[in-house]
Length: 493
Image 1 (spheres, rainbow, N blue to C red):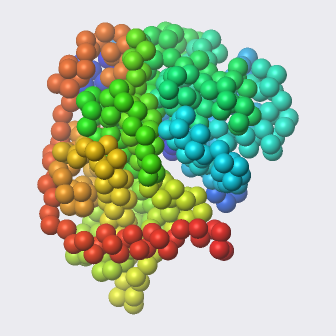
Image 2 (image 1 turned 90 degrees about the horizontal axis):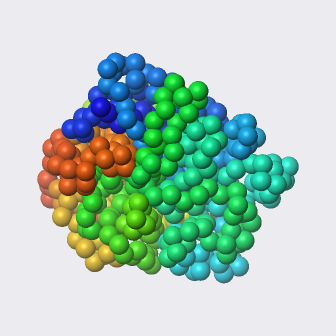
Image 3 (image 1 turned 45 degrees about the vertical axis):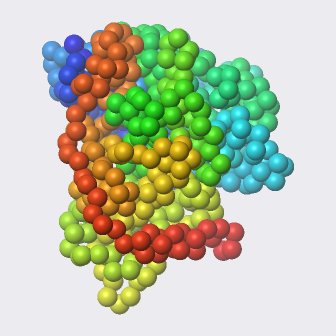
């Protein structure tokens, strides 16, 4: 018996079959297109996400004949706004992706009107284009024909998990879990429900939003005519970073993880306490239990890390594959003063500036592509350090270790740089697909495949620990100076 985990990420869909020992039995992956209609805009076609899901699931199941799944877990890119017809399940427009920055002016307007303190107190978030609600406001203000169908009740609003569940169940269920809901700017952390006040502020009809359900426990079954002939309970749902926290077995307060993906996302489990940040971190629901209890996390989001490596590959073309960056970076002893600030879609925590833009500093005639490659890995380590330092301070909890996962965690140099910058051990998961593993863990708990989190902790495995080397404080000082010079760039250009 196995659990089928669907991980609908930002650039593609990964599907895993996970057995009782938490081993990945088989794997399927399909990319889908990224659409950039204007500078700073990022969109996905929901239908392409669904087709990628079907194809990846078909590949995964075909690779493991005889391993029958008993439940489905779903994890997903968060904050992305998806609209679809409740009857046909077709989408009248492409989804607006979490990376999209088109709503910066809406955020500025709301901040100027004095709304941010109340929004932050209620949601644990901040007014930034990253989150879902302002994307919906933008559609309402700029595409009235589409929005009229939302107001009329014909078109549903949700995040990627909601959309996939609608497709899996042929529209029978319109739901999201608390971890995804808490990323929308429409969810009240204190009540655990959609906020009428916030819906009115952003102009979102509350009836168009999905029902909020626990992160594990059966919410419905897949329809075999829609999903590869399979009728399986959908028993686990979580946003990708909360799923990775779960997949890293960080079940206790004080445990933290970093996932290196398109961006880097650092979460610290704060247990039943929603710790309020005053310095740029986010307070979020980690997961909700079937009895209604919620565990919370502090989160720092670095928007561009793995996608910076993709830019070196696809934009500058100094590497042919992402994996080549480690070899190129190791060909030099240091970045020789080169500093890369990869603010290619603005800056997340702790600076939170949608008007920042990327820059490379310290170039000389002696600078090479190897120095830029090493500076890129250093930028990831510095960015994560900025968040972890702040997180430890605000939670008043020094981190004993950092669990890491995601594709870039396979890079030994990055893991070593990270341990050195943090001055704590970095523990790399044996399963780098921790988001998918977390979805499997949640679904398995939901159907009794695993009895409790103690069993999951016992199943989790490390692939090695990186211990810190001495660090030069001037390196981080130089990084912070470089970051300061990228702030507000779009306001001055």
